[in-house]
Length: 264
Length: 244
Image (cartoon, rainbow over all chains, first blue to last red; front, top):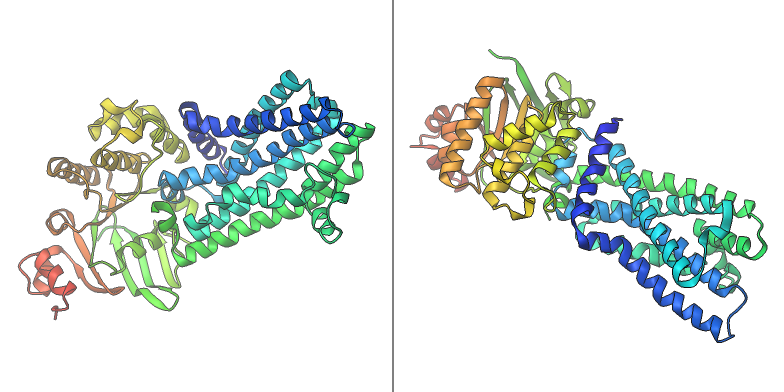
């Protein structure tokens, strides 16, 4: 493993975001739109006296944390697509770069994107709604780390599918996270879901994080059990996603698809 | 006889039962310019991808710089490079930024100096701070060639390197490649559909058809073998199935 190669891959994306307004908007625009639209709706509920207790807090907290997961996922899948779109993939794969270095670079980029979007969202929530996400306290750190890891796992799976199936799988870069969202108990507790869906929700790490967040905001207690379950599930999914990536890379090399991915 | 830098033995690649490369063996010596020739679908691109480790062989072995490609991918790829008309580079980055990223990927020492000299060599130094999206296809080809020379490779793979260049720049590029080959004892593997160019630049040529080597030798030997007037004549005979 050579850190200068990882640094080179990160620097390439640094140059890109430095000068591309649309790419910067992709990081900040949608989280802000979400925050404004849903933030004002929850404010309206609260002011109309029809809100559930702590509804605004739950909702805004969920919005910010969900976006952390989504940005982490996009940090991997969109950064990979940037290489496909710019027909740069072959240049990378004929270099001495190891696939593991490629993965680590993409993970690092996703941390930067997540931090940038998360901090701006937190600031907007504070200024517009007087919501302080840091009220979640020390457990915010394991919450964010778990969402980051789950985002990586989803990102690596969507990237692997794009590597294998090409343009027809590109939609996964945007859609896979949202496919999981209804079962991840982001904006409502797992108990709201129909009984047969609840076991599905329980095997999604994010559902334990969002349940945990609501527990912290309601009772102030850190939900250690939820955190441990989320960590174990994330460890399994991240390992499985990395295996999935290497498996698909083998298939792509066997079928001679890298050239197609590199020039399509 | 020079040092062998590439040795291919009984290499076969099949895709879902279709043989793209069929039990071929050849070797290339240091400092040679070695051309791959053949009609579309002959297996040239597959062969180059096999030699770059982008495709896993079905059977056979590839030794590059004395090492097995499957086992020493990283060590080999740090000493070779590749340029093709069909690939590009990130369009938002300037030429200098793109080359700097690749210089770092290849661990090039004194990267900025090397970049400046390559940009100047390919006459695109005035575009150093221009976004790559503003380049013409010929300028892009020169940029990818500059990228391919960043790590002073011992072996250079060029897939139709002059396809989008005007005759002047194409001629300069060929002259340059020949000069670099002499100075650095670089081995160059070359594909092109420009028969005149292949005849002019190649020391030896492998003629592929339907995944098999049908001839290997100097351009003159191949022309003589097929009783042709020039390489283009030979190519047409092979492509139209008139070769004996």
